[in-house]
Structure formats: structure tokens, C-alpha cells
Amino acid sequence: MPLEIVVPQMGESIVEATVAQWLKKPGEAVKAREALVELETDKVNQVIEADTDGVLTQILAEVGATVAVGQAIGVIEAGGVPPPAPDNGGASSPVIGGQGADATPVAAAMAAANNVPLDGVPGTGPAGKIGKADVEAKLSSPPAPIMGSQKPPIPAVPPIIGGQGASDRPVERVPLSRKRKAIANNLKNAQNTAAMLTTFNEVDMSKVMELRTRRKAEFETRFGVGLGFMSFFTKATVGALKQFPMVNAEIDDARGEIILKKYYDIGIAVGLEDGLVVPIIRDADKLSFAAIEKKIKEVAGKAKEGKLGLSDLTGGTFSITNGGTFGSMLSTPILNYPQVGILGMHNIVKRAVVVGDEIVIRPIMYLALSYDHRIIDGSTAVRFLVKVKELIEDPETLLLEG
Image 1 (cartoon, rainbow, N blue to C red):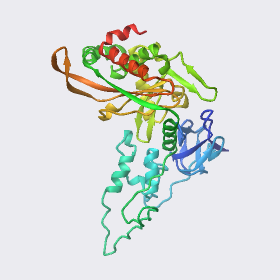
Image 2 (tube, one colour):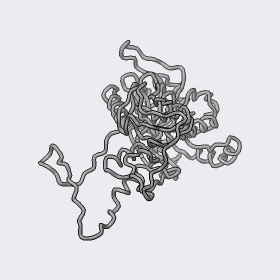
Image 3 (tube, rainbow, N blue to C red):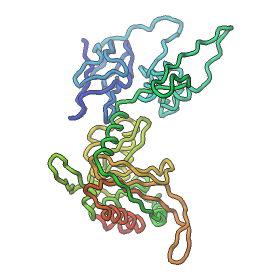
């Protein structure tokens, strides 16, 4: 009996998606709850699983197609048996653009755009998954030598419109993913709407680093998770938000009101190959250090596996981003609109500082707070960041913040 594969509901605001990759090919057997196809939306990627055992008989929407919620994109013959493999001496058709290959959506799109068979690209990701860097490496590798005197055709490079005439310089065109377009629109909307300003400070990480070194092994043994810096900064941020509630607010432009939020849902930015996502740590004020670390590990893992749901990404009240993991010394983070504040962490560097009347070497991190100047005064922003600094430099006080 044929059963349609239908695009499911993925949240109130999501009405369509893009087919990122098919994980099965027509004629292949599938089992119930086995992944069939990955869909990409503005916010999250979602994998559709088979409802029953059978055979995938038809693909109605190819990779890259835009599909609507409720639309049929494939057909499974329930209880069917796959046809025998053709006797062609072991030859197989090359897989283009990720269909049937274990590749990320970005890698699949890049391979399709450059006509690269993914079955010839070695994957270096988890479980051999093909990533963007693998496709780039394949594109940059020299072609296999051609037997005989026949020379390979020289591919035509399309002219670049605009500028001073047509260009014969090599270029590569990579389609924007749906997620990347959404990120671009959201960031530009934040810039166009908010009166963004950034203030800076520096924090001496000595006491946090000493405490972390002293308690790290015991913490991991007791709670089964590592003790990182993010839990300290999450706790410090919540403490500062309680003292300066306007930084935890939102503007309702339609009604001309400020919404002061009495809860603390902290977004933690996670950088992925195909863009930045900001999963939410709900009710962070009610969580212990161990609970925060476990939650961060959970959402970061879901983000990297493409398993975040819409509920993981919506409703945050304030965000934290850590460019220091990539070596950033200083930055001006953009607001995660409609939030009105975002804290930027950076790398830790030993610097000469004056303590009392002496010059000493201390591990220093620069902090940045970007805020919406429409409702947050400069003095409020500065005092908020000073409060974060004070709590980090005296981490035992974090226990008193509740």
C-alpha cells in the first residue's frame, strides 16, 4: 500500500522548508522510524522518519526544492520489497548534491553547484559525514590525469555583471541556504530597528580559573559534566539582570510599551558550519552550576547534530556569545532581536595590570555588552557590565545570587 511522505508541522511561524538531502534513494528498503529526508527551515533542520517498514518508491521533491507544510514529497510502498540490484559489474551512478550521501546541507549544496559526485569525497566529520571543508578540499585537489592526448575542456566562467566589464577570474557561486538567509535578515533587522551601542570592560579571570582548576575533577566526578566558564558567566549575567531589569526587557513597538520580563531565559550562541544558532537555557536563575553545564552540553550537542527544535530557539530574554573560543580578542556583537542586550566574551590573555602600586601579570578577558539605547541608558549598560565583572572576579558571591 503506497503511503505519502508529508512535510509535518514544524512550528507556528514555519510554513515552508527546503529539501536539504534525501537519506534514502528510490528502490531502497526503509524501516519504521528510519530517517528518510532532511528539511531545512529558517530556524532549524528537521529529519522526517518513515512511519512503517517498506520501500521508498518515489521522490516527489528533489534536493533544493521549496516545499510547504502538508505537501507530499515522496512515496513509500508499505511492506514492499526492494528490486534486485542490476548486474552492471559493480558500477554505480555518482551521487550528486547529497542525495543518498551522508553530508551536511551546506556540503550537499556546494557539491551540487559544482557537479561534484559526493561518493568520491572522503568525509572527515563524525561517522565519516561529509562537510563543507571536505568538498572544498575535493574542489582544490588536482584532477586525475587523462589518458592519451585528449585535453580536458576548459569550463566557461560566467561573466560578472557590473564593475568594469566581464571578468575571466575564477569564481565560485554557492547558493544561500534558507537558514543563512534567515540569519542575514534577522541581523539586518536588528541593525535597522535597534539603536545599538556597545560598551566594554575587562575582567580578571584569576579567581575563576583557580576555583575551576581546584574543583574541576571533583565537579566532573560528582555531576558527570565538565566545569566550564560559561556557567560562571551565565550565573553572573542573571545576577546583573536582576539588578538591572531593563536589560532583560523588550520593546513592543506596536503598543508603545516596554515588556519587563520576570524570568531569565538565557540564549547561548553556538557556531555551526551553516550558521549561528542560539539555543535557550530556560529559567537559568533556578539552575545550579551543574544543571547549567548539563543543559549547555545538551543543546550544543543537539545543535551540532541538527536536532534542535523550534522550542529550543525561541523566547530568550538575553544572549551570551563567546568569540574567545575562536581566538577573538574584542568584538561588538549584534543583538538577537527583539532582545535588548547581548554579552560578548572573548579570549583570555595574560596581561600586565596594576594592582595596588605593583605591576602584575593576570589572565584578562575583555567583555562587550551591546544594548538597545532606545530603552537602556549608557549608565545602566556600564553598571550592568561592571556587575558582571565584579561577580566573576569574586566568584563565591555567585552562590549568594540565588
